[in-house]
Amino acid sequence: MDVVDKGDQFEILVLPGAKKEAFEVSVEGNRVSICAKVKEEQEAKEGEWVLHSERSFASYARTFELPAEVTDVGAEAHDENGVLKLTLPQRASVTTKRLPVR
Image (cartoon, rainbow, N blue to C red):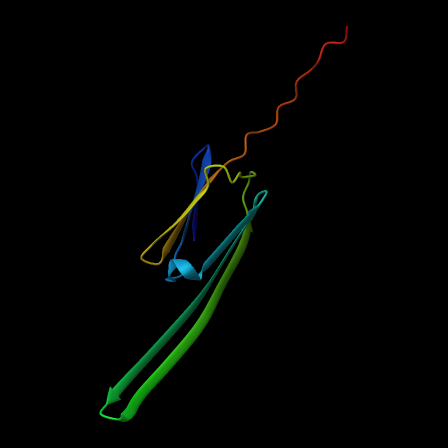
C-alpha cells in the first residue's frame, strides 16, 4: 500500500489483486478502512476424471489513519487490473474568525 500526500488530497494505491466487486472502502474523518475478499478456483479435467482441483479463499483488511481529515465530496475509487486507487480530498481546515464586539 502506498499513501501519497498531494497537498489538497491523498492518493492511495492498494495491490491485493482482487476484482473491483471484492473491494469495500469506508472513510470516517481521517480513518480509512479497505477490505477485499478473493476467491479462486482451478480445476483440470481429463475426460471424466478430475485430476486436479484447487480452491483458495483470502481476505484482506487494512485500517489506517491519515494525518488530516478527508471529505467524500470529490472522493474517487478506481480499480485497474487488481490495483485499487483512492483519491481522497482533504477537508478544508476550520479557521477561527474573531468577531468584533460593539
